[in-house]
Length: 497
Image (cartoon, rainbow, N blue to C red; front, side, top):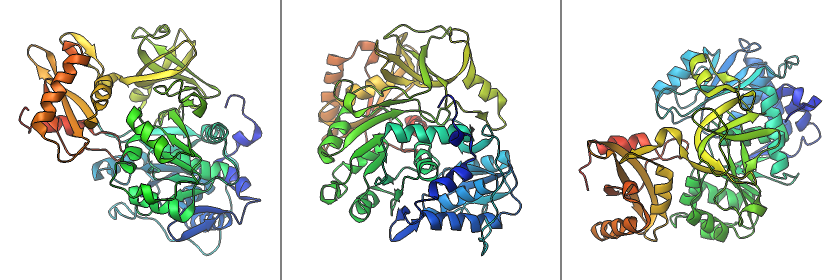
């Protein structure tokens, strides 16, 4: 993604037209019984663009919708007018949606399930004329983060970043003309958005789930024979939990499983390999602010199963200490992304932009501070160590919640674990564990006794949870990540156990 070739200097609409030309009859989107070819997608986008007569170059249009073919049409139509699609998660609270709308001041809002915000016009009978070429450094998307710890931020990415990023991932994943990507991840989540870009900017067909859950994934496997499954660890764990019909679904066509979003537990990885024996597995790492940062090629999965791989081409990753100096090999610090993929900033939020995107003298360039902690080995493989803002100081020692979660989840009776903390006069912060047992009929008292003994054997005193809660499931945010805010709120209403 370094020196841009002519393709990468395009505006996304023109790139899409080039991609669609020559494969007009190829099905672009599979969604239940709906099939749209690339020719139909281009024509429908053009007719929709004709109705967006108030949308000019650089104007915004907000999209708040579940995954469906109409979202692809809407995104392409906005680009045809030279506008900027603004993606907000369909499950975001109304206050977050209203914040995104107020901040971006859109000409149009596509929000079929949120009628108070919806003002989307019906398409015209004839396609609109395409906009003229725009500078490749123009903003081409704004994706609002989940905002789990406050109001969401609008992450701006340039046209060149989107086009070059889609091309790089296509090369890393070795996509070919017969591939179909099964995408159950919301488009408003950066990984789902990446799959949309693979469709529109690389011409890789998408298979969408109907409904949007594990049942929908299994139905799509049987009906559309996708070759690639794009997922996050929580979604994979749910798919293989025993409650979905995955054992009876057609899994033979899946050649590649891609995952990102958080660390994959060894048990989930093993189940994925057993469930999809013909598939290779590629672990990835990145933020909305960096597009994609690292990827672990399938050939390294056995030798580096806990790594998320090496920096992708034209990007550079470094571990930075608190004083902004470079960390040594194996030393834990904040992961900072340099080079291609760096976002332009947060929409109309200079202060938060400057907190995240700033100059590092040791590298003599600006980088994106991810907020994630990690370390690198001598060969450049990256290992995640948790979030910087989730570190717990127990008995005067900094503790990684992710490490504790991994230790607890490795117990044979535990399916999943989450760690939070609360203030304590003596300990500083008291570590609290929420655990989900493997079996629903588990005796909670016996399990807690067993877990406490297990923790004493594998954790230092300052690492051990002082309180355990046995729960049926962990709360999730719209991106399928554990909702730690919800868990901390539960501490205020749940008796100590």
